[in-house]
Length: 414
Image (cartoon, rainbow, N blue to C red):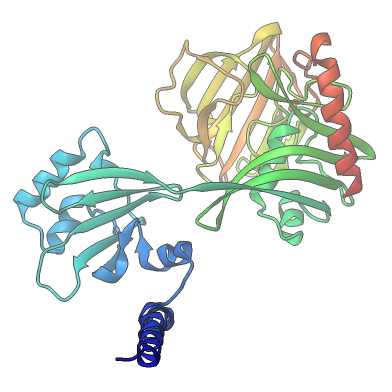
């Protein structure tokens, strides 16, 4: 081979070497890019996974716990033997009490796809914030898993036309927020006496789980205009707890609540001569009747001691009597039942549940007959003056002022 041939041969080898290095690599890259489905990994997990289980690998049967069903009856209906159910119950001890499985809650059964193998997982929706995962493979395991929670900041403003509940609904807001407002302003505003054109402005956070909104709120600031008076609620942390104060730093919480239950409707007011709907004659009615559904929680309007928990055969039905400071006594009548464990001599806190609305005794429908006495003298519950709790402390005034100015400015801008 002469010199010219050697040069040509070397050049050919060089070209071939370059082709072997670069061309196949490029073609392989092109082919792999065409064949691979590039999808965001978070999106894949959302589509493919349910309860942390790769759902495409399983056949899933969904169901709802029926009345009188238990874990045993549900799993037996899905092919588990008594021995397997016993193993599962034993594995759940200390993690989840299977007796707490309730009717109306959803569940899911996971079976391996395209096989005759038994169930691999059973999942119980314990509530909106968590589920219970029962792993039936090999060594049985039980785990309570919490859903990720997100708090979303929102604002709402509106005008009362018929009720605060309806006004919230008309504003496109969960009306349960109205109950939250009633609890915050419960010492200063009579929510049974709202007027048309009363206004509200609220800054709040709402809890979301799995993109579903829950009726759980954190009120970050509120302005309620009632009877031409503006009432602010500003949350501030003091003495180890969050409390609400007005714009002057005075606590919105008083010694007594304005009402012993979340607002509904007043059907009868304090009177020395009221026509009794059952007896069909006029007589005094030294209390206020609140119409509410059976089972509505009834609160102690202030801290005190239970002096009576009994049945009044003269018409009051199931009733609770509480003695408070400064010679005040409150009575709650026509209850459907008492709070669990409530007994005479027990000390109760303000807003502690003492019973539930009913229609026991001489009553034409479910309601609470609420009465207040001072030194044995009947008082109109709607006219009780309640001393506020401790205001913002002097050493906290500067921090409170900064927060107040920010909240008030945002509320006024709504």
